[in-house]
Image (cartoon, rainbow, N blue to C red; front, side, top):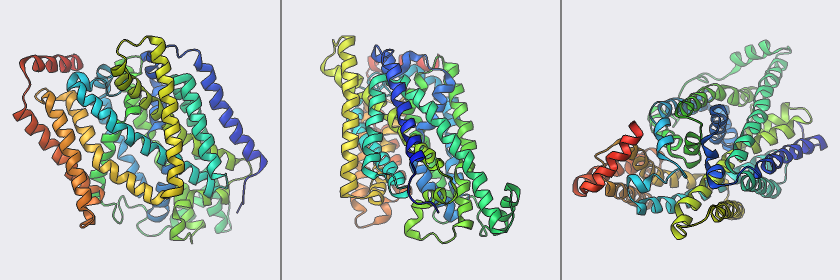
Length: 499
């Protein structure tokens, strides 16, 4: 097994970072206003937006945590990942056109029209800490993967990758982010296609043979019983149903993903973009997770406390000199694409939904300055929070904390966002009632979880917050009905989406 990195590995990593900076510099002259900086002036080709959506839908955590599940349970992480496919197909059918018509300058600016300006502000202030926490965790995860697992300096990986994401997003805005996502997609593709044949060769060698066919035969002969079961352990069908609702909410309302819908050239392109994403999400998981499944055979004794390092271990086992550098670049790609998209989306909310409130008569030049300052602030806060997390909490505690936070906040935020696009009878003030009630009940359940820990688990927490939010929306609409003027405004909004 290889130890450490070679000069060619570092050369590959440096070349990758240089390419990202070059893209930012190229698009820096083209991002002349906030429409271009945040929305690509609604001129992004569907295939580019689709690849970017796909790249923004996962991070290095997919390689770490899901590879650990593949090593332990076999097919289970493929089942979990495939839950995203129907979620995206439903988005293509019901949301693509509506998002493109509803959102204009930011992913949540329509909230001020559909509900109230106050609710739009509350969503912005609630969403920012969640985005910072989520992004910091992803940045920390890439540092852990390439730092601890593959020998690349941990602090350096956090600082350099964070700074480069900020730089090309600061310079070129959404267009630079999209093109970098496109490049990073092919970096990941190179690794995804290279690893399975190498793992099959390892398997064939165990039986004294050669060739991928023989390796696959060895794999089928030696995998544990039930390795291809769709569910296992706590990942039962109840878990899958709730996870589908959770991932569906995320893919439908995540700020950076909504941005991909409304940045396309046309409503038809928005649908085509989503269909492309569904195809990629279907084809990717078996290729992503097969190496970890194969490692169960040729690396059979990985200790439980090293399970999250399975992907790094198998890479060091099978990859030649230079390819480790490519894998590290792929790990950076998986996370950098997500972070860059989030940085740009967060900056769009800070600029269009917060800064404009303080400076409603801002000139295009002042808005562009605000946009770039917001990008810098976002990046600096995320990098600083990442280092704080590294030294204070540790990855496992942080992952649990992040999941619990999303269980509390995601349903109360996502349900009113989506309901407002479809339901005319939902009153404007009911949106705020649903948001506040859902979060309040989630926080109460989280506190009660100190005595009844089961309340903090994914399934009960989601059920509590989602059901409370839905009930509060119904009650709010019943007892806080719209005035005739508000009712007319809501009907006009929904008519525009359904035209």
